[in-house]
Image (cartoon, rainbow, N blue to C red; front, top):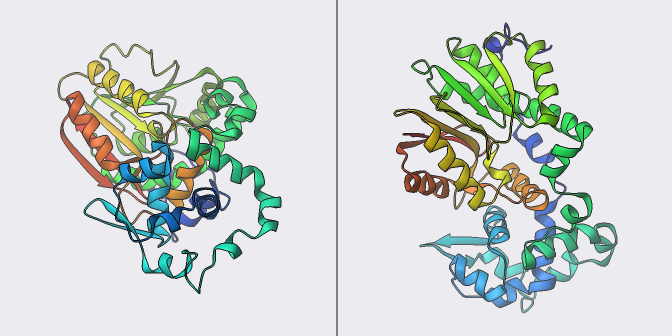
Length: 348
């Protein structure tokens, strides 16, 4: 069944495809992190009985901060670390199986030689990111963003892939917002336009522009036309970092955009939105937003993929809250969606 304007309202899921969201973005990256930490950093033996803050961990092991923000939630989710009062410590599981002084040590098994033959490149890539915040993969194959800009075939296939995931996420997202009192929305970096299609279906009085780079626009226009939304949704070409919104929109919508950029660039985008919004206009950020503990493994695996291929990562919810407050947004709220995703909404 092809998705269109008529059947969006009746779309229902019998099962939750969360496990597929992880498979689509990872190849046992989480396990490889453990191997790198054991072999190259002697992480568990050096950690032992200490209780360390994130910054103390960074200093002790000489990790880069972006990578640390990605792997600490993974170690918690896997049961290797825990946290209390902002201090991390080894779990009893780690003390029993990952300290070389233990009679039940599993380290040599984890580092079994045949694994390196099969996974040497991935291993070295993770080590490089931890030490230098540089991805060997991105250096050799090109940054993900550059590939999107320069390779139309890659841009098309990636847009279609994200569209399939977007149907599931948009179906939940749209039921958590009320845009009935707003007039015009810009979907910044809107990819296939799937989120705009759902929003337009539920709020037909809202006019929507999707802003995308040239290599994506043709595929976006094609999908919007196929689904019957050309009257409500327009596709425009531009770069979100320098596009002039001219105060035309009372809603700025970012879906799965901010995680591709470092904090400096994220702040730049949010400042631009704040300046461009009219009074009482709103920003809606839909993304994976991590908490210190209890994150879905699918989200954490996707986070490693971002670490490998972009300048960004999934940000903690409190990081986005703090940025919005610093810039000037008020009445900031968060609404949980599914699979570790949420909406963070602020008003000017």
